[in-house]
Length: 64
Image 1 (cartoon, rainbow, N blue to C red):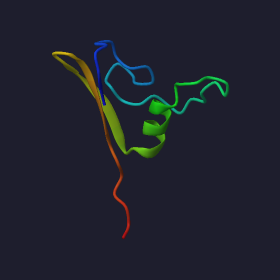
Image 2: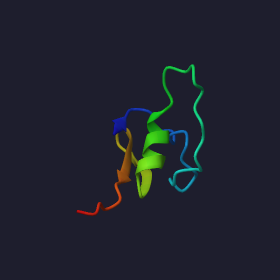
Image 3: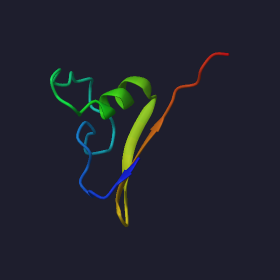
Image 4: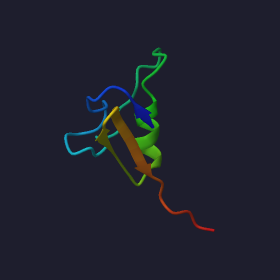
């Protein structure tokens, strides 16, 4: 994901690691994206870009 806001995304600590699980407001229309990333990923973070920031994540390996 990429956006034009250079500020760190909410839900990631100062090192870019996901903070612990948090429950979003059940009536809110947004705010679940990073909750999904924290829940489903093995690792996640962000990096600054010339145009804002990019958020990345790593999915855990699957058995198959």
